[in-house]
Amino acid sequence: MFRSRAKEDAKTESANEAAETRPERDPQAPKGRPTPKRSEAEALRKAVAKPATSRKEAAQRAKKARRAALDKQRQALLTGDEKHLPARDRGPVRRYARDFVDSGWHIAEFFLPIAVLILVMSMIPATMGFALMLWMAVIVGIVLDSVLLTRRLKKRLRERYPDENLRGSSAYALMRTLQMRRMRLPKPQIKRGEEPR
Image (cartoon, rainbow, N blue to C red):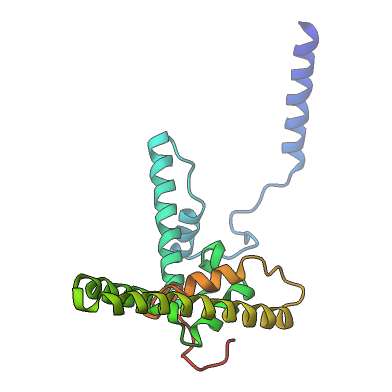
């Protein structure tokens, strides 16, 4: 009981001595840094946000942050900004695979319009046989185009990025060929016939 009081007295004495030894700053003396502008101080205050006081406020902040991240991601999908793209679209290998697909024509990108045409033709009895033949031709064409595309893409990727992990790049490129050029995300960054970046 007496020991703890002695310790407290020793602490207060050392604090008083430290205060006495520290020289007081003259109010007219410069403080060593310029006074920030009001706009800078407000921006700093907003950047160093106060912690959430309730669960509801924390959920609202998290929702706003998620929405901002999704907006950045959506904008990146339209512009091709590599920094904010989703993880599946990021990296030089994926960018090259996208450009490789976007630089050429592929049968698979016309699959949906052809499928609608075949569906309409199959409803008409006179063109039912032709619809079946067209269906088979489209399937064979897509398979051949896909095999050739993956072979050429793998060869180019091995030459260009020998140390990178190429896993999944062929499937990524094939999924991109199934989308019509206008509907692809991230948006195509090169024209048809151009060399991939």
